[in-house]
Image 1 (cartoon, rainbow, N blue to C red):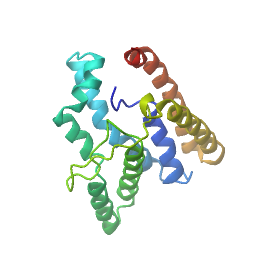
Image 2: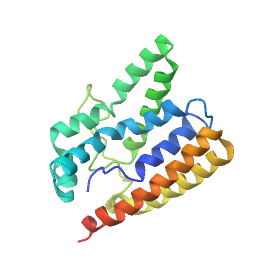
Image 3: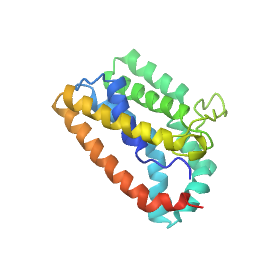
Image 4: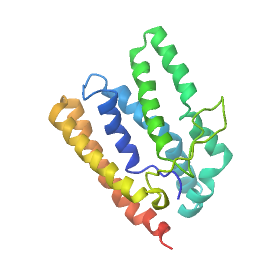
Amino acid sequence: MADAPGVNTPAHVVLNLLVVGRGRGEAWKPILLGALLPDLPILLMYVVERGLLGTPEVVIWQERYFAEGWQLFVDLFNSLPLLFVAWAGARFRGAVFLEILFLSMAVHAGGDFLTHPDDAHRHFLPLSEWRFRSPLSYWDPAHHGRFFMVAELAMLLLGSLWLVARGDRAVRRLAVGTLAISALFVAFALVVWAPLAEP
């Protein structure tokens, strides 16, 4: 299976709130949006392929995800040079919301850079087609995925608890909501995706 958004997407939300927002609540909206946007093309691909075209799960994640059109769409949202240019433009114009949004997207892309082997993005488009194939995967057992999933769930839980304890009202609600969505993702993955990994 390829880069299916799952627990990983809510984990980006919590991590970005901790790293970019440092637990402060005033910037939670652009941080949340920036944590979600890099995975939006994958979600749209899934909705089109599964919901509209009826493509089987195994075909989506072993074939359609790797189609050049979908790959380009995903990679543009994860391009560090494009995010840097957008961030610099927002900073130059004093557009604080956009500045934080693009910074949050870059933090998400950086996390993906370190945890994607065979499903790696082209993080340096349009400057390079190169993909860093990490030795670590957030899901693939062949690349320490089981360990990483446990570590990610622990970070998600501990980070959310920290945000609930230290954040303002909006951040506390967001942390609790993120945990609830994560539980739904886990249930979905166990029912729909786990059987695909069985030999």
